[in-house]
Structures are given as C-alpha cells and as structure tokens.
Length: 314
Image (cartoon, rainbow, N blue to C red):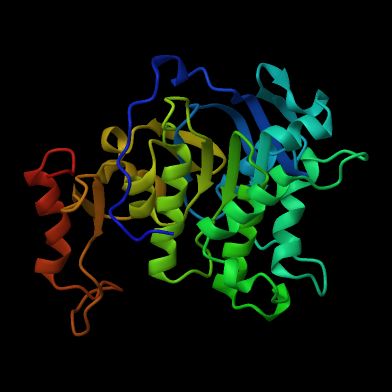
C-alpha cells in the first residue's frame, strides 16, 4: 500500500447523488425493547466514500449492520436496487455487499491465506470450488493490504494491527460493488490508518476505463479523518440523522457542538483544505471556579475565535 498523498476526490456522475443502489427508508432498529435507530432515511451515493460519524452509542454501527443485513429492521427497510434487503437471496447479497464488522473472530488455527480466501466463497459453485479468478482476487487483496508476507502465519499469532489488515484483505477479496467497513482503522498505528484510508479512496475512484469505482460506507470515530476521506458525510446523534452532505458543506463548529457537545474551531486543513476540527484549549491546573480549571483567557479562546469566523470556519 502506498503512503503517498491522499487520493483526491473526483466528481461523481450526477445520477449517483441521491440515487444510489443502497438506501434506507423509515429505518427503525432495536435490540429487544431498546430502540437504537429511529425513522432513518438514508441514501448512499454510488461510487463514493460515505463516512458515518457520531458519539458513542448513537447507532452508527447498528445502522451499518442493518445495511449489511446482519440486523433485521423493527420498522422500515433497507433497499438494494429498489428491493427490500430482507427479501433477497443470501448469495445475491453476498455478491453485492461486503461487510467488515467490529472485532470479527477468526476460526481457530486458520492461516492468513486461508482466511482471505474465504472472501471468495460467494463466487464459488459446487462444480467449481476454486478458479484462477479466485486466486487473482486473493493475491491482489493481500498485496493491497500489505499482508502477503504473512500468508502462512496463523491469524491468532498476529498483532491487532496485522489482524485488522487481514480482515480488510478478506473483504477486498470478495470484490463486491458495495463495501461496508465498521471502524476499519481499529488497532492500526497512524501510518497504517492512513494507508488503509488511502486504499479506501482508491477503491472508490473511477477505473482507468472510466467506469464507476466501488461504493464504500465506513464508520469512523475520528471526525478529522472522516472529513479528510469522505465524499459524503453522515452525522448521527441518539439514533437520528443530524446532517449529511459534503464535509466542506456541513462540518462547522455548530455541528460539532450539536453532535459531540464539544466547543471547537473548524479551520481548513493545511494539506488538503478539508475541514479540520480543533478542540478548545486543554485543561490547565491552577484556575479557580466550580470545576472549571481553565484560565479566563483559555475559556474565552474558542468563543472568540468562533465569533471572528462567523459559522466557526476560517
């Protein structure tokens, strides 16, 4: 994988916006009596990277599970090509949607190559268990995630970061048009985080022949990474959609305060120009006040900066 500059966004065809293959309509999700997501309407733009952000327990991962048919809706529906996901054959879904959940568990004593190869199962038939196309897909996925040298190692012996890259390789080997990734940078150091996210952008880029790239939906906790890598950003809070759109259009200090309860200043990233969220001044010892340990100057820093930039962006 390359550590070069972040692949730049490319304009998606007009028909991709608001008319994607994957969508949710009136989606309500629950675990027993606890409603987690309520009445969610969502369109996933084709050939783009959509990133879902929000505070802990806001329903991000639950929504992703429903988009991959791992969780049946309490009400509403997830649609694939206009058809309800719950009514489609499992093989068709597996050939269309790849999903990497949080903290997947590998079978005991399985090697890296064998685990990545399992991504090809939806494409196999009883009369043809393995093909040259399967071999090519697995080899390519392992090369792109930098795990080729680990092929003969047991997955149980790997570090958390290595294991995460192996799971991503398995998802890539599936070669689906739609790829759902739940916190794919978990356990990765900063260099491998950037490599994985750059790879995601490459997957969504149009091909050399001009055809549309893959559609990717990710859950990320890091708002700055989300703003840097997303074409389409979805912000959730308490199971509801707060805002969605291009990061440059929706990431403001007001949105950060509403969704995360955090005072901040939003400035252009000096490298990409994307929104960069800078939190308020850190805690400092020695100040007086009921639980407020910042100095008066520190406490005033964020509001003053916000006032000077209107909507919180400079």
